[in-house]
Amino acid sequence: MNDCFSVDEIAETCPAVGYQTLTACVPVTVTPSAQVGVVTAKCCGDPVVTPGRNTCGGTKNGACTFTLTQTLCITVPVTFSAAAVVGDVYTDCVTASAENLCENCGEEE
Image (cartoon, rainbow, N blue to C red; front, side, top):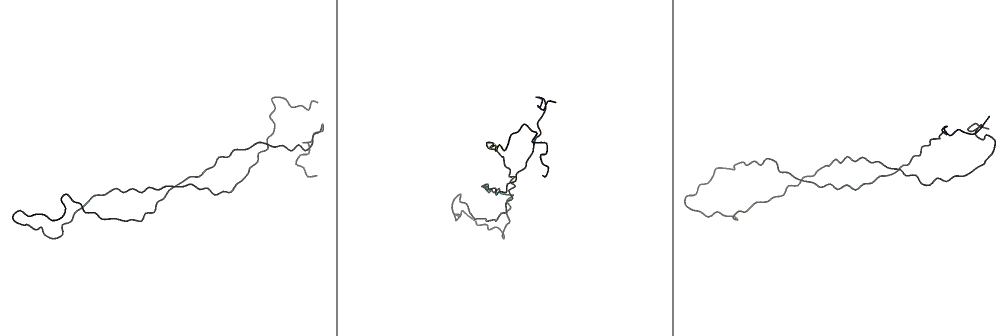
């Protein structure tokens, strides 16, 4: 009987699993924006009618400014993943023999 493997025969594989705990960190920049909604005006009191030509007070083509402050809670979904790259394989050769060393492999002695 020939103990050689044929070229077409596929060698058995021994899958292994490794686990790694880690903390992933990613800087996130949140840039807020503001968009004005529909502006409404409400009249406060009756209009004042002044006869003749009157100079208006204030600044010509001026504008009034005010500040709105709003605290926001932003939800930023981020999916973390990882890629793994294996390094060089090192082999510790235990023994070699003409006898079938795999015959009792995994059996308790």
